Image (cartoon, rainbow over all chains, first blue to last red; front, side, top):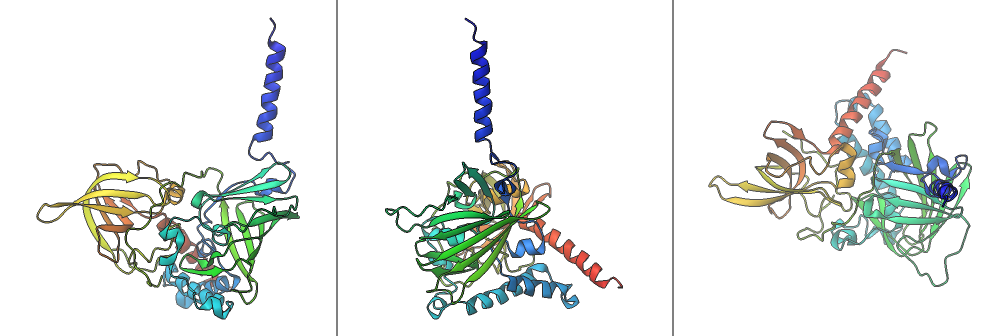
Length: 273
Length: 139
């Protein structure tokens, strides 16, 4: 029996499957191909370290002012960063409602992620450090996978509404579209949870009315990914708050299992970070 | 001696704040023998036996950032081996238990391991020196 034609057919099918399933399967000309792949911690620059979790333009301007002042040349970066972060926290404080101010900054000893190993909600996950993998899956969705907590999100590109039987969830319901080469993601239906304001040492709480608009774009040189996230939550924020974050292109990075979270056996409440 | 500076976000625990468990204002140093290095997420852990002046051995735990973070700087499961004699400096717990958060490790041959963020800070200080040179250049 001549099996060669079958073998060729199988080879062709294998090639087709590989092409369809391979990372980066999105059309090379599509905007998704600009963002697809593995990103990780920001470049080792002053901006990268300052925005390791998230940052504001106000905070960055303060940091740059300190860095550009010759009086500060002998001071270590960590000191200037701490001063600018303090300034940034005061700015964020001014954006909070009276109700939110009562619990800001949130005592990290009360963090359910710390106490009970509960994975983060979207208002922390999008600012998580380390890996972020972006993959287009078919024509109608993009998947975001984070190293931290091995968190996963699906961004629907067909504008679908949240299923009627789906309640509020930690990650909410996300729909996306392209604005040129920028991926715009709108998220709602998020259960009340904790929010980075702007990092683990200054967290707040958001309500179930939170809406987040994320804009992801790649730098012209291709080396960095920038997130501009606008958060709206009238019970906790007086006005929309804009936080930013940076990742560095890191194709060799891998997401490794997140399987050894242990509940703390000793801790102290009320310690100021 | 390590300066005691405020931890940056990049130093802190990846999945929760540092402050409830460790005292960032203090450093302690212990010497002993590694019994196990767990290269895992969210925190890598080192177990070691530490002998006091009377020779009584007590188990200590050294907590690190997680594998997700350490792998950024080339760390592997073999970066620290069982049986190695080491001296470790870190932040103690608030309760004074036999546990610390890693800041510096010195092996018997004098080689050192530092948190990945130390490398980042070196790069940033170089960026600052370059920035200062450009600022001070005559226009």
